[in-house]
Length: 258
Ligand code: NDP
Ligand code: 8X3
Image (cartoon, rainbow, N blue to C red; front, side, top):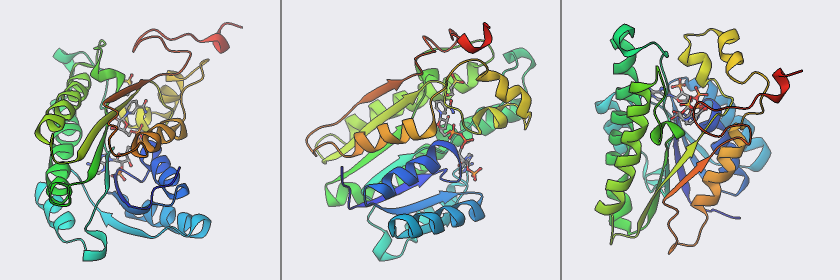
């Protein structure tokens, strides 16, 4: 597989976004890497330059900040302004408290990041794609966009929204040559659960206890596959789960049975 264009990834400082950067670099892409933790994307860019000779452009970006999204993406230097693939990956979960007991600040953060941030970045990037009559938006959805589980009402709502936005964007972009896809993982061991549980690493590790989760590289491999299909092929949606997971809440833990 080979991809010679420019790929913009949100949330490239950790987990799936970072793995996507590595996987796109390995197939020859130029990368616009964005995240709030700038030093992390700096380290990643150094690694990718050394390993693959990858050209990288770095943007410190909080996707919740609408002005900043339009300013930073609109202000890309001309040699970086033509984005071929947008990976809308930045996202998070906050807590699993029941709705009647949950902290509304966590709801705001999830909605602002997973839904509004994805919309802002898409709105900033897609007009150029439409003008050039080519491009590909790949959203990170989730099994939580297909199911709902206790304590997950708002996170699941945001991922259902990603599914709806993906479908709507595909309709709106029909006839422009721009493709729209969603890759929807189950359990992937990243910093996701540490963030969800407010930094409680032990509680986060417990989520994956006794089972084999997906790795960020598994998802990146899928995202690169989606991006490298021939231009007339649009992969609408892929759900990818660990073999040890049958639904959002039904998980086999063979390693915990001994
Ligand atoms: P991580 O916590 O490992 O990484 C999340 C990334 O999102 C970080 O790079 C973080 O960067 C970035 N991010 C979070 N908030 C913002 C923000 N406001 N502005 C810009 N960047 C932000 O989690 P994952 O890699 O697991 O998650 C990536 C995506 O995959 C998310 O959309 C998540 O919902 C989805 N997903 C994850 C699954 C899992 O099991 N891990 C399963 C299904 C979907 P920084 O903090 O530096 O800004
Ligand atoms: C993250 C995976 O199952 O915790 O999207 O919702 S899950």
